[in-house]
Length: 218
Length: 105
Image (cartoon, rainbow over the protein chains, first blue to last red):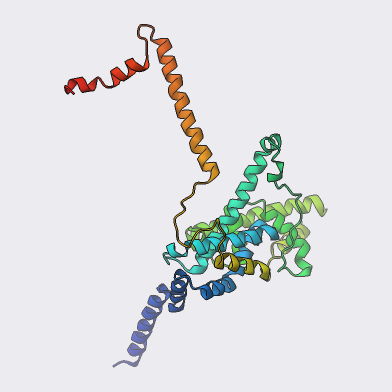
């Protein structure tokens, strides 16, 4: 038999095995999810250790507020605990947790915006404390190096002015280093939609940063 | 112009290599505590939500009130506009159940 033919056949066999393996989840994650569904308290501890920083950083990047991010993280894991039995394992556990973090963070942003719009009515009924209007303080992300802190604060301010879907895509891509494919799974979009979102987000950010430069740096 | 471009590029790259913020360990403890000892308002994992929120209850009540108001308004308007017939509860009931005569009930 031809030696090259043998090598080619084996390479083809290996690529088929690799492709089939990539579609199945690692056995360890399936066992871990089963333990969570059974209510194993140790498993919940492990879940927190592995995923709490992911959820926290997602919320922190979107909300740009430490206290809000901590509250949302607690809500995320309360939701995970409540809904774990309904988790169908159609996606990875990390994807599911990212999705819940994004949803809850965006819900908070939308409710704050609604409260701002209803500000007059709330004032009439003496409920102005619900407005939670704070001055636009520059946001300093704890993970940014000292020399980039000032510039990153300007960038975060610009990010907060993006439409929510662009904001989500850009934040998760930059801060959580999610690939386009992972972003597509989290946001339930196609990869091309994610690419388009990121392109528009970067374009808009450059525009906003240019305006800031014209206003403050000249 | 070049300075502006450079500044914008630098700003866009200011998040590169950003480290992860660490969650306060106290928050993790709170979460675990909430899981291990659920409070009076919390649910068992996977249970169906069986309570209705206040805002939803108020919305349902407002909807029912609106329907009743519309019905009353329609009846009053109908009785005023049709001068020949006096619409009373008895005549409405008679009209409504008139189908039973057809079946000799």
